[in-house]
Length: 254
Image (cartoon, rainbow, N blue to C red; front, side):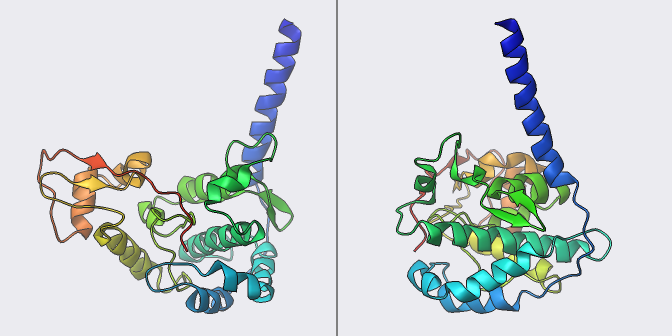
């Protein structure tokens, strides 16, 4: 029995290690790509307030698949890609593959429902359903294994969209290296200002659970959650205010 337990644990940790290596060790000679196709798609099928027209994304699947193929053929590298080019790629990739996952299972009331019936999958973000230069990935790999691990940039939490009502809105514009700083600032400011996502108050703020789930990412900037919010909010949370968190609505963002 002990031997069996040891073998199971060894195999489990081996798979976890190999999964981590798949994210960390990728050799590529690719050059930065243009995100014009994604820009056209989101301008066409995403409203200014972030509502997604999944039905028309399905009708436009030829163009979406063309962009997916472009992403899949070009893995960013540190030699030919700048930091902003790599980060813009991964944010756009996360959002595009999320759209792809939803429309492949549409209609659905929530992205979280997609995992039903898939064995050994704890949540939808663990489904390996795409490859980039032959390396198999899931959405958790992109968000946690690449973006959060390699970029000290908490504003990505307002840019990566999880296809749900309480998520920060899906930007109806592609992220680009040239505009990335401005775009990330706009996303975070818009997210904090949106009263369906955050209720900022001087004394009793009620924030998105994103600020609780990823508190460590925000605090890595050297400030508290309160001070971080105050950088982007017109209403300033007072020192000592009791911060509460809103329920998270996982209904599809359509």
